[in-house]
Image (cartoon, rainbow, N blue to C red; front, side):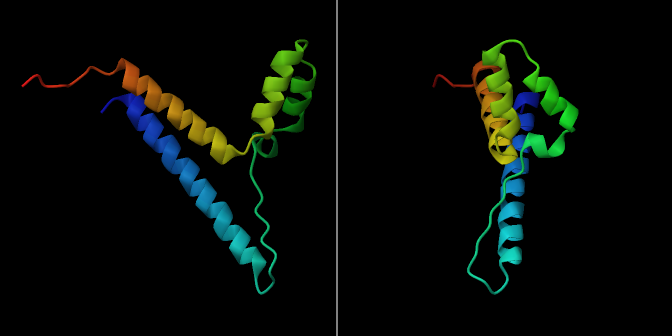
Length: 101
């Protein structure tokens, strides 16, 4: 198993764990009421406000919009996308083991 497959598996496990953790928190906060409040964690919640101000200062509007999208995207989805990227890298760079029998 290559390092790219191990990184993909670990990113996938972390993303699933984060998603399940947030669902458990939402159920525990629910208590006896019928309100289910699921809140996502994004990169903007984890980084300093100066980083977000730096993104606003980027001169290219396209780079700025991509950076803002990545900063506000839910962290579980971002980790899942990273896992898919590493699985594709593993699929295209690993040696093929197909037996010709």
